[in-house]
Image (tube, rainbow, N blue to C red):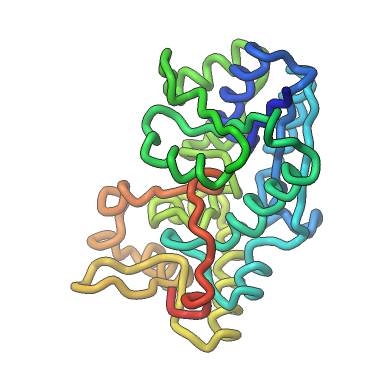
Length: 282
């Protein structure tokens, strides 16, 4: 029997890996990590550099195999290929850079009759379980964090430290997840504001890439949406930054969009890009 943990580099997938290895041992367990960086010299797109420290340290600590798969593109190359800017409703980067490379590895190296796949969905995300289970068919899917005893994220971080592993540094900076350096296109305004505050260079990179693709598509499309009017309209990263820097706090303060964190759902949201909608306004 083989046990494959979809290892994102976040604390929930770490806790899942810990539970699986404690039950089944390290020899038949694989940590499967999809690297979204693309160009390894590009420090402004892809995972935080500390993520790689964390996944390698975890594999060494657990004594299990770490497999890294790569598509070779970054998110903006994917968006250009699809002629579509990813957003909270549809993110082709999830499918192309994480889901497909991992599924290709599973289909190539694993027998579904003797392989169980594990994902880091916890007890607050039970509504995602049916879709993920269907997506991994014919592999058996398990989500240990959906079963008692339930463990919250703070407890997972404490357990990780007690095991002698420092969690990804993004958590210490207040991020709700540790993926894509806080520049997840599924995320909302609160997260992009935090990115602008903590890492303006990374924000500037994505702002520039968004503007370049808008000009290439010749369409008014964007990652974010302006919901201050009667109908939501595109809100570019450039406009969002300018509003914050110009002190328009009456509309754009953290209290107004604290709920708009959003974030990584790459292994839990399995909506494939619809060929009929690709290229339409995001």
